[in-house]
Length: 524
Ligand SMILES: CC(=O)SCCNC(=O)CCNC(=O)[C@H](O)C(C)(C)COP(=O)(O)OP(=O)(O)OC[C@H]1O[C@@H](n2cnc3c(N)ncnc32)[C@H](O)[C@@H]1OP(=O)(O)O
Ligand SMILES: CC(C)C(=O)C(=O)O
Ligand SMILES: [Mg+2]
View: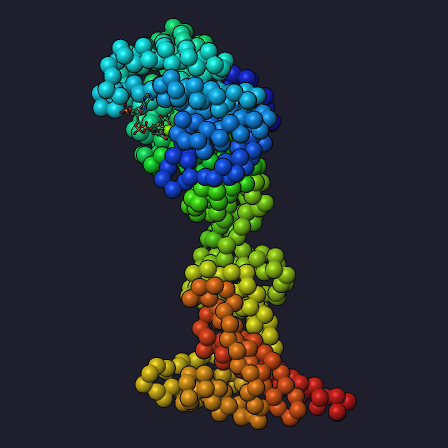
């Protein structure tokens, strides 16, 4: 239930309540490729009912047997919301819609007819006077079936205002309890859409007998802006869809409208009864069942809506989330903001991320790991947690080692022989060697053998990708055996050859450490 409080601390009045009419299952399903199964529709309707949507437009019962079945089953199962079925201004459509919603606790028939000259002439082939008569007849028919009838003027925003007022008056006179003035083709701009509502509400003598409704399409990307403008001009029902699913560019997105009202209650003193913490869940469900992916940067529920990669923003978020977030992730059902590690990230976020992963590094180790991370991020599109773990593990091991990799350049390809120019830091002294080999890895290992002569035998060499993609970090495992002892070590890097060198060097360091320890114990 609504718990919103206005900026001045007062509870909003009933007259400021905006009814949320969800048409995901009707207008949303109308967009190419979004067809949902019967079971999926029941699941979506259940969630909409639970989250506090006021009216669920469950389908267009005349469209198909399946649509009829879905509307009637949703009508039977829905506990709190009204359930609407859509019908053209045609007797059989209205009868079918009435039949489908009749078991609902709160049934609604939503009937519509075109009012704009272009639709009347080219689609309906009817005169303006014909349509006035059709409105009176069909709304009366619907009202004889149910008490709650919504009438829509299809293409209202391209309809001359005088004629639109006559149609609205006729619909209310015939018993319509909700009047919807849709921007069917997404043509309106906010000031114009608001003016249409203001004029109709002002001029139509029986306007106070109906609730006015907005229904906006996003052809110009203005669906939500127009919706808010309509509310400002007195509309108290909003028709919208989860994820903005709908005809062509879609309908006004429910989550955007709900959160705009909630977040900007100072300028938009209206409220809805939708539980906003369920928005993310609803979005995921609709995306899954309609097979429509949600764009990453979609407002409110896109995966980047509470994700931050740039260092300056991450630093701000860590200090106080309100520096870069105007609503809390919890308010839309996301557990917390995420800090995404990438080439734009800074030290504050890097340290915090490592803490989350269980690492507490000293200043120098952190600085070294950060330098390697930046290097990695420059070469790799996404730095996953696993990449960081591999990188820091590697850093922790090599920090105490006597042999360190300084640089590596490899010549590989079909020409052969492959060669590797390697520089190592061996106990504080840099040494370089260029070796050839039977393949680039062999060349690298030969160079290491030349720089750090040893008897150890390579028993295992294995490569695998830490994360997915062609830019994934490679993790190489090397096993070396010497004098009855064997050690296994790993090296990670997006470059498999560098990872190979790191792994071999790490194994040598381990062998040396073992050797040192046994010498010490013999001496002690
Ligand atoms: C803006 C909107 O979203 S409107 C809703 C759009 N949604 C849909 O169309 C989805 C479901 N539609 C359907 O399944 C089918 O179109 C049906 C069952 C409704 C009708 O199918 P058909 O009888 O084969 O007609 P078809 O779709 O080809 O043409 C539409 C007919 O409805 C008429 N029509 C369109 N809107 C209305 C209306 N509001 N009131 C009365 N007649 C209308 C058209 O003029 C056309 O009539 P005609 O056959 O006399 O030329
Ligand atoms: C059926 C009506 C309300 C509609 O979807 C529109 O006009 O966009
Ligand atoms: Mg529509």
